[in-house]
Length: 597
Image: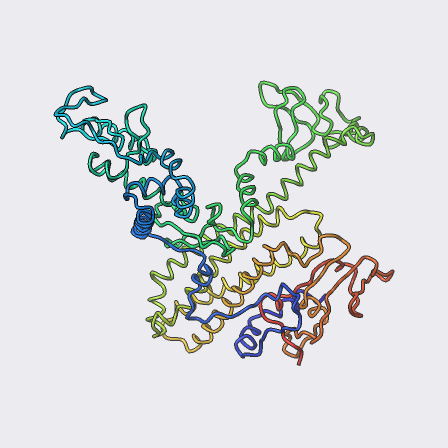
């Protein structure tokens, strides 16, 4: 393997300037089996990066849009089934706003459906008398002052308003309101609500009905962002659950958590639960403390000798190593910084189980801390990048436009760069949750994953530095700078390269790095991997692939006594230290492969 500097030559800024924009790059179609040719296309500066990322997998709906769709569905069912609009609304509510389900159930057994929702086939009118007795307050009222549902049970206006108001105050259950008569199941539709309820109750009922259209609909969900009133209709079959709401909040439509590709929803749920659970506290206690031999309270030893004194009221003095009473210790047992009794007992295996448990807890805690700290760091970096993006859009872009004498429309590449940084920080954050749950025994996948993750971090840092520190030079300038167009080319190029890398990194992780063998018997490398090991440098110091390639199928049988392993497909020999390590290069991930000249 070449040195680390050689490995990074493939994506240095000189390559970005010289090769990426010169038109010399192109997709090599000779190898159709390489899943990690991490470049598909390059976006024009004028293309909206957010729309590209969404891939049209959702439709953003405002409250007006939702009401319009709801009215269209009600009218459609009412027309097809020849029933009133209020009855169509009740049927749709019963069938979770699925028109196809309404039609299927209605035409299969209309009588059963009517009975289930309380729609009587024949409307029963109130008795034709001058006065009627209210079934709630038992007072007599003129017939004109009484109202009833389709069942004909009469109630006065005041009792109806009280009944409806109480039901609406109890919550969305009012949408399936029935006749107040305990023995009657006739439905009370929106037509009666509009006539009998107060304006305040009518507004509440309308809101419940609107929310029901989204919350009971399998294709729609509310955006989980605080204060957002948009709903998202998911386009089934698009495969990607990450959606972007009209409020710019990105979330997973399936689990409603923050967008988390390339990690699946089950892993996200486990990771969030682990971050909130008390199990890690117990692991820390087990790994970093020992119980007092007398009172059993956990004690942490952070410095000093082996003589430990428990806190009041216990005050028991004991040896930290063997947990025996300190009165039995002294110079003959090793003094203050050693314990002969512990060493002898350890040789006999007396402490094997407890030490093993402590070591396991310590290793588990160290692993979790490693991944969690980096997960949280990228989360903080993403929040800061979003704040910087907001500042750029509201303040700095106008300043830069005035300073460089260019319209803001020509500075869109800066906003795209910051949007890409925010998105990449999110992806990079969740790769640490992915890495935490990657099985330890799959050494090849873990090594390949860590390599890809490291390259992703390096590429993102280059883009972040260019968009932040190098841009600041032009913001601080007092006169227009002649090399601003060169900076534009550089930043746009880094944005494109980073976008392509991360998009393909996500796809590779979502497929479980399927081209990397999970056992020690086989590791399959992509075309660019072998190109890297067969590569040579031109005089500019950049990696050039060697035209031909081999799919690396490496088995343990190919190891020889000279500490080298040989490729099964070619004559190249590799150091033993690199056995089963997938050496993919950034040229494979961040740009198309190039034939040697």
